[in-house]
Amino acid sequence: MVRRGDEASIGAIGTYRRTAVFSALVEGAKTQYAKSGDRFIGYRVLGDGPIDLLALNNGSNIWIDRDDEPHWARFDRRLASFARLIRFDPSGVGLSDPLGGGELPTVELWTQDALAVLNAVESEHAALLGVSDGGPVAMLLSAMYPERISALVLMNSSARMARDDDYPCGIPQHLLDRFVNSVSDPARGDDGVDDLALLAPSLAGDPEFQRWWKSAGERSAGPTMAKALDALATGFDVRGILPLISVPTLVMYRADHVFMRPGHAHYLAEHIAGAKLVELPGRDHLAYVGDTEPLLDEVEEFLTGTRGGTDAERVLATILFTDIVDSTKRASTAGDRLWRDELDNHDRMAARQLQRFGGRQVKSTGDGLLATFDGPARAIQCGLAICDGARQLGMEVRVGIHTGEVERRGADIAGIGVHIAARVQSCAEPGEVWVSRTLTDLLTGSGMTFADRGEYTLKGVPGTWQLFMVEG
Image 1 (cartoon, one colour):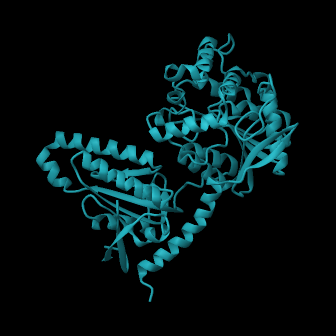
Image 2 (tube, one colour; image 1 turned 180 degrees about the horizontal axis):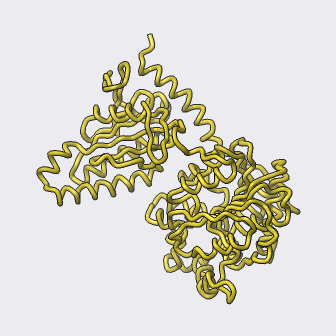
Image 3 (cartoon, rainbow, N blue to C red; image 1 turned 60 degrees about the vertical axis):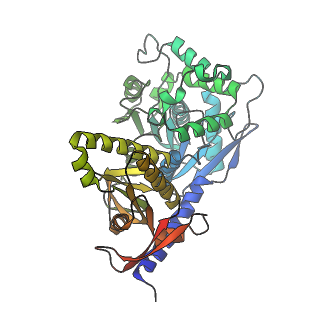
């Protein structure tokens, strides 16, 4: 006889495996090659939506070498949920053939690479997503081949970077030259400009992201090519083609961007006929960093007419709840002011661990938090890290985790899966991470070990549920 908890576990496994197929597609997409002139251009295709969406850069020299970065993987999953997402490395970058001796990358060259990729995937009508110096490539492609382009989306991009008499929003040329020389000169080591602080300030202090950024950048281009790429990114000027763009255009920028002033986006919107201008919250240059939901909502609505992330969207998620043990007693003993300091220390620690393991904090529960993860393994690792961090702060927490369907309602989530995770957390012992049987079944063969804690009746949830403690 199958128990209620077992039925839910079996159902979640089926849903999880269907979702895992798509996650695997994102994380291990097959690299294919298009022919552009005498060079091979590496590209990858994700999803099978009705819209073709060609991504042109994402704010750095790293173009498609990104599937092991959780923030970028989540960003691409959302795009691929409503489109066939096409990504490629242009000539001289990453998986594509290098440039010949003395040859330098140009906007025109990369435009031909983009066209070659569209031909290879048999895309007759595609939307373009141009971020940073991918924007000029997208703009030129839109102006040259309007019959092939259905829409143009520009993010944190510009017609040029350098200041000019008739372009006052630009950056002085001597500062651009200093930036290029600094970030691409390996001899300068730690004395160079911290490009991560400029491009992704919200993740500049994350050691995991720092390591990935350095490794992916080195795989994308060596020092000489990196300098040429940075020179292209700071030296282009496509103002002359803006009046030739006739496709529907969305121009977006982040309001508190560290170095891209709003004037860049306003100039584009004023000089591209009918362009829509949207200001977004945040300061990160990289599109996939920071608060990405408003950006992705705008893109999806512009391209499809609807926002997939609106009320009552049902998705599979791993839900994590934490709770500080004896918080009421600790608050009365410590006093309001000291307890507030302790809570602040706890919240900062927990936020660091969520960022480290790719979690998304849904909300604070006063003496704990609710968060979601794309997969159960990361959630468990994060739960263990929060327990350890709390112990170092002189407190204990309980952690409960469950994988199931939830309803996304704006920034919040609801549904039976949320209730189950909350009840699992309430059963956990201080300093321990407890999970539902659903997670142990999903993680069979992962190497993680669990101690059976027996069957429980969870308040408000039908049937009995077998719960397990994660063994450190």
